[in-house]
Length: 170
Image (cartoon, rainbow, N blue to C red; front, top):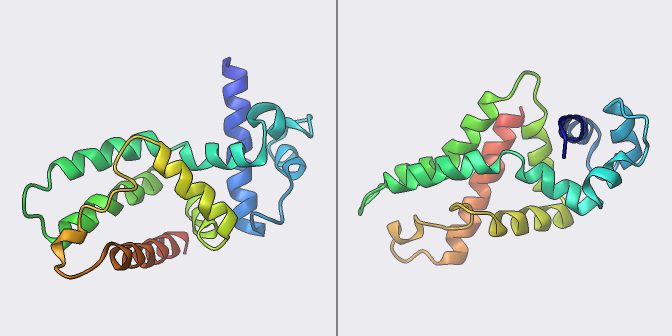
């Protein structure tokens, strides 16, 4: 896709993050996104992304390559006996760093916080994370807490994810 197509896709994604953060994911139509992005084609989202699910996947994926690289880097530094602090840092610091790099105002954290509250969108996000390279779906820290099952570790990780995104969104 040429530069103008890339710019149009980025403008649509920026517009969607803002509108989703302000009004909610389910309350914003593709047409509103196209209009807010300054695109005269009301079906621009469908043209550039195909479907709403593919559009949401593109929104989830747009910053993940750099975050995956950073996550892998931090996991490689953990060593044989990492502390719980180091494991949590390796898991969540790439997200915080990425959010910090975004221009202000950024709607990314508010958009991501909303994705955790909608089961259909949350499922799309989890599926996207599983299909991308990197350690996003791994749980390298559950062996640090003896007797804690994978399901409990995942639940606690989910709570931290909600708290972190909520704090960043605020």
